[in-house]
Image 1 (tube, rainbow, N blue to C red):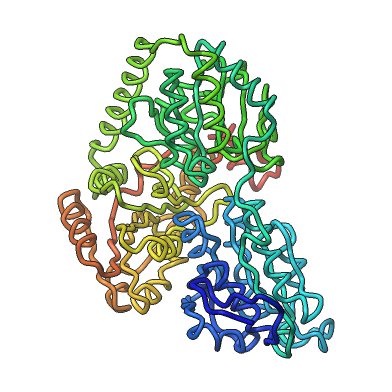
Image 2 (image 1 turned 135 degrees about the vertical axis):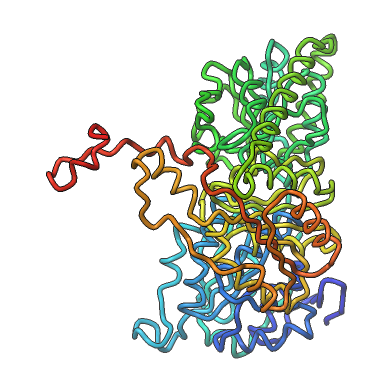
Length: 588
């Protein structure tokens, strides 16, 4: 017997269906209403069912962008994105973006049609060992061993993606979309759980004891706090302790900037107010963050990560706890459940703690000093415009509801200094995989996830060359995202390395690009080139109000560059062969 429900067909027992039907109905049960990819013969039998199932297929221009779109969608909604492509090159094109989602802890299911079972191993047309390719950049590679296991394996993929917070490859030989199976479509609650609770109660007690005794407690709030909807709970802990709250690298929306204990983001081009505020902490509560190596490196020549603090780390993944920094107390659990329990116990055992007004004033002074510093830096003249001025004007004009995606690159990364959010799920940044071309497709996915919110992407001109093809997708699919292309004519993150470490010898650094606004208009989008703050403010506001895909080609000074991105990994050049000795830094 079967009955129609809002989540698809509910089967009280197994019934006959095709594997394609079993896959699609499992997707419907998971609440999937769209997926990203490029059509291919390998999955056409499944593709044919999507319109009737109520699942939109969003055809992209390059499969790498499919997974970036799914990544952006998931970070805004919390719902796992789904991507699919042709076996061989279609799936291998997703390697970079799936690896980025893996490093970002983004649940995702990659439906990976592979060579048919009769021809596996013959190096046939579009054959690749996709499982081997993806093993190290996914949480799991789930292979369908038999036609009868199709739905079961897809359920396993979703279960692991959510449980371990990352992409999972669902690999299915292309001939296994055909045939017939006896299957019962299950609801998600029948095969996966959504929360992990508070973890070890003894660890909670230890954390509460440490916080109670702390004289200078500080908090780092990370992506896990956003995913678990735990910001209000973190607020309560911070207010009780009078503790400054920094956000982890490129998760500027993990604590509201308008709260008087917010000090901004740590990490490269983060906030000095955050760094100074946690530098002398005696107890550091890190919630929903893995405290990544790159995200805690010295910045602005400030070695700010506390060396002697007793660290309490809360994470849902046991692999992340104490992975990069020694801890005093580790709590394996859900960020919201743990935060709720910590506050509940702390408010009882530490009920006599009074508000530390002196510390709160110091936190406010640090914030104001930092804001003045970056405003002063932005107001320095540039030719034609200081890139910091462009970022400051954009940041000042976005509303509380605006979603911002940011790419990798010298100027895009500098946005970490300027972007301030009062609501969660508003900042979607390229994270520690560090690939260019992320922000724009991620913005398209974010807009699909929250159609009512304004969405902008901050992209350098180098990264824009990798993603501008998706303007066609935005126009075709009516996705009104504003691309702010910060155009300084170079791969400037690397160019800054050549400035500081290679005596201004530029190899491969400069970009001679087209007029990106004109290119956008030729693709059906709106486009405008600007080179001064007044035109930028006008054009940006018009773009947000237009409800049409728009590209702003923002020309900025290519000589005003942020500090080197990887000072930790670079050394001054030494040369021994005679033909190269003039390049040795000791001869400059």
